[in-house]
Length: 141
Image (tube, rainbow, N blue to C red):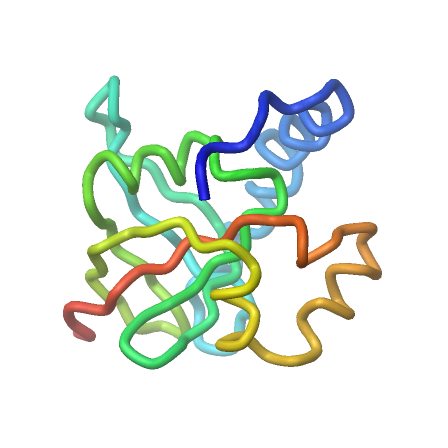
């Protein structure tokens, strides 16, 4: 799946709210043992700075799948694609991951929990119209 179209004004406003309000709150529990949130540690593709972003990473087979409800052009996703990997802390365990690839719903949804599309609908999202990021697990430490 190719990069999504430029986000509209509502999408940009939601992203801004998440970046400034929601994400800092989610980071207080992200990556912890019983938290639904994982932490993606990635390196800025332009700045070279380390960043941490809260996501919901679903463990699948040899790695993880992360839904991209705001598209695959978000900075953290673009950083991972350029770097070729990152680190995910999920349930208190740090995993090095590589081989990032954007999946369309037909490839991602069969590997994810069946209730996920229903949960997305509760937030006004359509899982059949979004992108997903798949990462292969290298290690668990």
